[in-house]
Every structure is written in C-alpha cells, then in structure tokens.
Length: 257
Ligand SMILES: Nc1ncnc2c1ncn2[C@@H]1O[C@H](COP(=O)(O)OP(=O)(O)O)[C@@H](O)[C@H]1O
Ligand SMILES: [Mg+2]
Image (cartoon, rainbow, N blue to C red; front, side, top):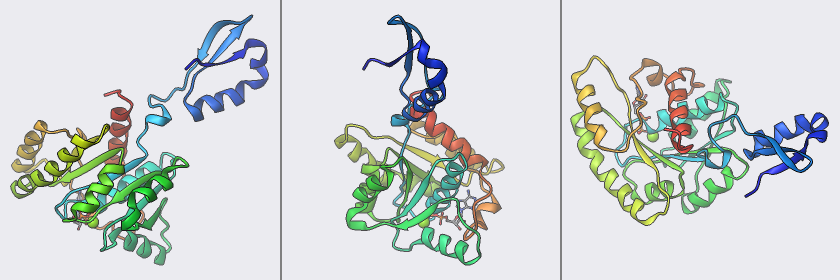
C-alpha cells in the first residue's frame, strides 16, 4: 500500500496531527514537494501496532506453575507502559477475580480489570475485549484441555510457564503435545515456554534452563521472589522481570528478535 502523502507547505500547520496519526496507526506519511517525495515520517516504535500481541494466554495442563501470578504481574507491567489491559479469568477457581476482590476490599486498586470468562464464548469474548486495542491476558485452569485449546487458539502468543523441577519438566510434554497439535491446524501460532521460580543457587534450575533450549522459549526467566508469593490481593509492584518479558514479547512479535 502506498504511503499517505502530505505537501511540504501543509507541514507547518499539520505536523502535530500527522505525528499523532503516524504514532496511532503505525503507517508512515511521505512529505512531498511539487508531487515529489522529500522525506518519510515513520513511527519510532519497533512494533507496528497491528503486529503487537493483543491477546495473550497463560496455558499449562499442570497447576501451581504460576499462571495466575504471571498473569497478574504481566498485566500490571503492561498497564505501567500506558496500555489498557484486561485479565480474562477462565479458571473456575477464579483466583484472578478473587485477587481483584481482595484488592478492592483493601482499597488497593489494580491498574487493570479482571473479568470472568464465559467458558462457552471465551474466544469471542477475548476478541471483543481486544477490539479497541486493549491487551487481553487469559488466565486458564489446570487440567482442562478444552479451555486450553480455546485460549491458545484465540491468543496471539501462548505463554507456557514451567517450574524448574524434574517432575514439572516431565509433565510439560502433555501440554506441548496439545499445543503442537493446534499448531498443525492454525495458520499462525506462537507459543513459548517461560521458566518460572528460577533460583540461580539451585543446580536443577540451571539444568532445567538448559533442557528448555530444545523448545520454543522465552529467554526471560522469572525468578523466585517472596514478593510474588505474598502478592495475592495486592497491586503487583515487583514488575522488572515482567517488563523484560513484555519487551521480549514485543520484539518477537515485531520480528525484531
Ligand atoms: N516466581 C515466583 N516466585 C515465588 N512464588 C511464586 C512464583 N510463581 C508462583 N509462585 C507461587 O506459587 C504458587 C502457585 O502459583 P499460581 O500463580 O497460583 O499457579 P497456577 O495459577 O499455575 O496454579 C502460589 O502460591 C504463588 O504465589
Ligand atoms: Mg491459577
């Protein structure tokens, strides 16, 4: 598609408006004089908005791997960049919703909203919520293949948390098999493993880290922090590792990494 053009004479008056448009649409505008191209104003972000992930899903058939903890902290980290974020809680145990309820009860407002997923229309709901540019993060239950499939199908990126233990690595196989099956059916499918509760003092953590290199994975690892254990019902504040994760997600989706 040809770039939009703008005569150099109009530039003085229209520049603020043009810059806003370039930033919002991600489409370059070419400045012309006597119909000839002089220069092009391009967005400074590495990721064109249409390529930024809008729907993320936290998926694992195994429970206790950090899906809800990561969902809530990643949501807070993304919200801190100025994006609108919604968490869609598809777990019948509604841990994310309860997290929000506790926070509200203590007047600790979260920088994003958590809403209950309707299991029969999860994909439509996620699509609808993301339509205005809101980033939707879907938290899912363990041991539910149907929800895992729906969430993974609608997501731009699937994050698969895994703990650095031999048992968790062993159990990872069933989740990956399910995702590989979806990958065969979908024209576009992105998933990556996210090592969680990494503790550099433990030998097994390093072994697990090395073992994951045979799979699609995030190079960002989430360390084990007491702040995450205590974070339930509070506005997540320990965000550095999740900001790093968000940057990695943007770079990957933008084809930059
Ligand atoms: N990186 C981490 N550091 C410390 N504790 C963590 C971390 N990730 C998860 N936890 C703790 O592990 C437990 C299970 O995490 P949770 O997010 O509920 O997992 P899931 O949603 O996959 O069942 C919770 O008590 C949580 O506080
Ligand atoms: Mg959970």
